[in-house]
Amino acid sequence: QVQLVESGGGLVQAGGSLRLSCAASGIHFSISDMGWYRQAPGKQRELVAEIISGAYINYAGFVKGRFTISRDNAKNTVYLQMNSLKPEDTAVYYCNSRRRGTESWGHGTQVTVSS
Image (cartoon, rainbow, N blue to C red; front, side, top):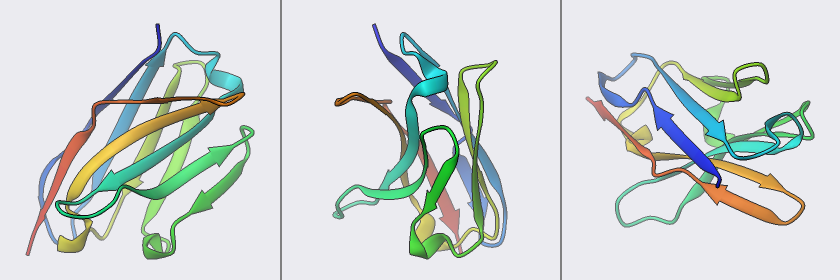
């Protein structure tokens, strides 16, 4: 059974940093595409960053060098380092895995950025 468990969210002031973690189990992690998405109240879920085929990294335009996605295959964990956070980054952040047409989601972790 696939499990993606996010952690590291919380309340931070604008300009601060957070590091999100997503621990995966039940998947062949090292060959799975992994990503972070977010959903703000009243908005659609959107891609934040993803690692495709273990190496290619794609960021949403609003990241603009502030966020860094990384993975540790030995720990089956994907990270999202978020710096220079803005109030508009407030959302629930979700971990996503994809492989051969099978997609899984975590339950999400809340990130709230105060102005």
